[in-house]
Amino acid sequence: MSSIRASVHGQWSSRWIFILAATGSAVGLGNIWRFPYLTGENGGGAFVLVYLFCVVMMGIPIMMAEILLGRRGRKSPVNTMHTLAAEEGLNSNWYLLGWLGVVAGFIILSYYSVIAGWTIAFIFKTGMGDFIGSNADQTTAIFSELISNPVILLFWHTIFMFLTIYVVSRGVKSGLEQAVKFLMPALFILLLIMVAYAMSTEKFFDGLSYLFIPDFDSLVDKNLFSDLFLPALGQAFFSLSIGMGAIMIYGSYLSKESSITFNCFVIALADTSVAILAGVAIFPIVFTYGLEPSGGPGLIFISLPIAFGQMPFGTFFGSLFFILLMFAAWTSSISLLEPAVSWLVENRNMTRIKAAYMAGFIAWFLGLLTVLSFNHWAFEFTFAGTIKENGLFDIFDILTSNIMLPLGGVLIVIFTSWLMSRSSTIDELGVGDNNIYKIWYFIARYIAPLGVIIIFLNTMGFFKLFSLNN
Ligand code: PFF
Image 1 (cartoon, helix red, strand yellow):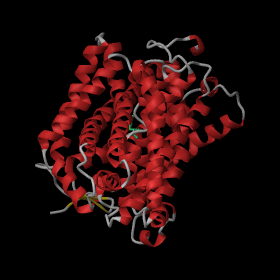
Image 2: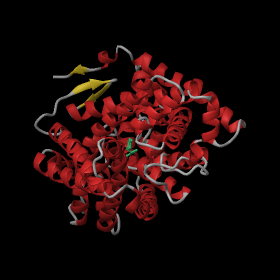
Image 3: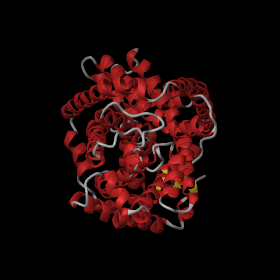
Image 4: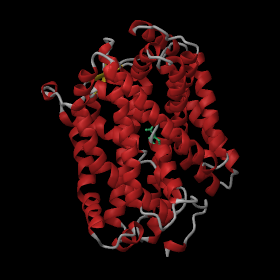
């Protein structure tokens, strides 16, 4: 039945546009800003290894489940869950899962936009040659000066949120295709150039071994679940854009003929390669110039500018890099706003423009808390063995990626593999009852939910992980 049901929002014009859009959502600050700094905070290789494990064993199967739900429901996540629960004869409260995603989307967008604002500020700083010949102390000073000024942060946050609202108000499909088709490959190439620069630095191999060779000794007095698995799991969800309905809504525009399995592998591969490349580009610079890998959210904004200040045509490459990073953030942020906007359009009969401005304003307003987290309202606490210095920003980040997204993901995969009828999932995965389906079904039923639940349970006493530092 669902095969003839058209999306209320229309459809992507081809499978590749879906792949591009979903990759646009997945590849963003999560890969280039968050992945390296979390890797640095969590000790390098072991984190990367666990991260890859989480992507394969939980991320990809959950992404398949989420797209499957989107394509079958063909509405905003809240209404999709409502419709599918009714169709499958399940409790109607499943629509609350859609709301969990909407709320997570608001919170993530609120701080995502502030960080994206840093990238816009850095386009100008690199473009004006601020980093030419600078050392680690100088780039650290420039970054600290930026984040200590709430007015400037607010300014760039406002600009970025406006850009997000603008695209969403026009419908995410127009514009997205061009942006992703040309800018993503350009970003990829620029990362390769950065990797080439990293190869020329003294500590290239130190950077590589930090990233790829787990240092098990450093794990001795850690709680593996809370200090390693939880942040890696959170990063997998964050980076793949899963667990909150963003990919579900993109799936709702996907045509029936397109293979969900194939699409997911392409998206996850692209996403993971960008993150790994970013790590390979950054850590050699970090070690060569004596920076601390555990430097926190400023890591790329302090390390990369040193490279741009040293390399030939660094001013050009530097500003181009931050321009492309801003675009990558932009194609992600629109998918964070879309679940709320599509709900307002469907249920409140609002025009898309009004809905986008309203929802965007709420996220913008919430973003003020992040703006202040880096200066006036900064406070320190310890989470899962790591000192966090930026109060509410860190709390928002931990709450969403380590709790809300995995919780959303686990509910999505339980709904799909335990509660929906097998015929519905076979119909959507379009593969018949063959081996691929069987593997997915097994992982989706047992491994992915149990993996997340085991990590959660072992992290319980969760609040004990927080301790205020004074
Ligand atoms: N995946 C995006 C990134 O890596 O930057 C961030 C993101 C987008 C997270 C959409 C969650 C989401 F639903």
